[in-house]
Length: 359
Image (cartoon, rainbow, N blue to C red; front, top):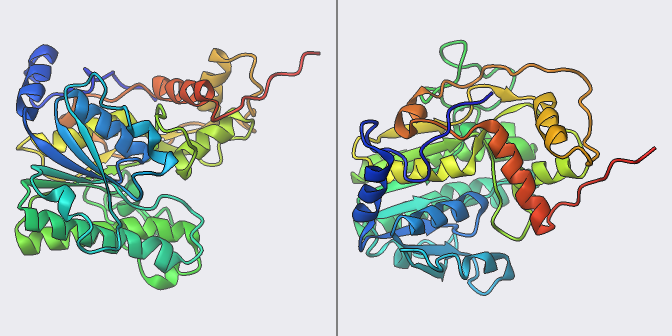
């Protein structure tokens, strides 16, 4: 369940370069370069913005409302960092909303998309914003003649997790797989499948537009994203999952995980590495069972009343992650991902751990 730690946010463009040279390369490469990040206040996007700023990029980031308290964590994120952040309002369903962000940007990172399982109307609240938002962002990128668009998709675009969906090679999912379970009859009355289908539908739109207009598109497909939380709020499945664990609930499902710091690194490498192309699933190879998470958390926080697993579970191989390992050189160890996320939520007061009852 663990893998070697990567050299840090400035991941290698070439495995032959030392970490020092890589950091120098990134800062030099970023000098005077402007990039656009859509949905900049999101869980994954905040880490991406932070790493871009650390590496000297000027970031134009879109949020739904620049005055909203939920984005206040971005106000000083560029303090003492080489890059600068400029926030601007944008709406996924407004066709020209991203023009200002894309204009003058070398790269567009499209991270904005709904990530929850409680859409009131699966078409209007989930599928349409994901699909049409991707189309609108790509239109702005095409008008701006950006060098490359990096789209945050999801492992769900490769796997639907329905019983009839199997990997093409019969064993592990890879970038060659597609989630083809996207007919409206499957997701219209199923909120979870609406989210899963929306990722496949939106990614198809990105590839369709990239091909039609000759714009370079690279896609990042994270599995369940975990890792430290920067925003002072709890929303989305990832943060909600760890909050529930801290507050005494069991892990509801065994799924492959990835670290948001690796996801951010993958986006940056997908932009600046000229050899980057196609799709990248960023994920642990195996599913992460509740028993493993319990062991890590209970060992490090022995006074907290963690929900005990009902049975000992074994991780199940699910993902062929060789392509992303080649791009990044390594991933954060899973134990670090778990502990860093738990600590960030408890330290910020976003999750209240239940204490063991002394007998």
